[in-house]
Image (tube, rainbow, N blue to C red; front, side):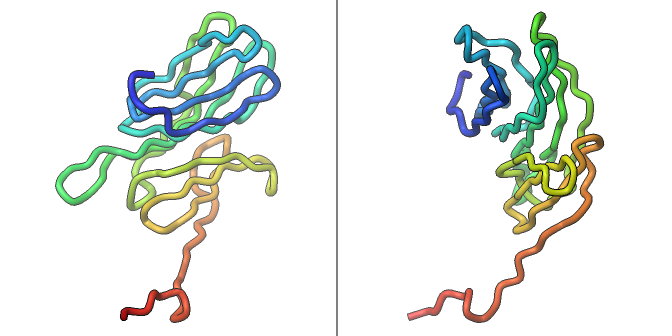
Length: 153
């Protein structure tokens, strides 16, 4: 990476995925301590999440923080990638743009409801997503109560 590393996730059993302010995500082979692949073209900071691994292929999800334009952020996106381990070839399988109303700050994978992703954003929401399409399946919204507000002194 050419800038700060901001996100990490293990992709069992032998891989680590990293994301950076440089707009790239990288896959590392932990057995050989070597770079396997670089996924470029993200908009600003990248959050990463390993989805699945076999001896020949990996699936990785990434979220980008987007590009500041005036007082708003545009072009934040969730992507799902396929990485060929032997060649380092990357293929963007899915891209879902701008469905949060702010930068994507983190992304994670879970098996609660089949296989799903979750993304969070400055817009105060968490979106649950399909790992097959990247599309939102549910949105969780934080609604503050009066006890959550900070008191002014």
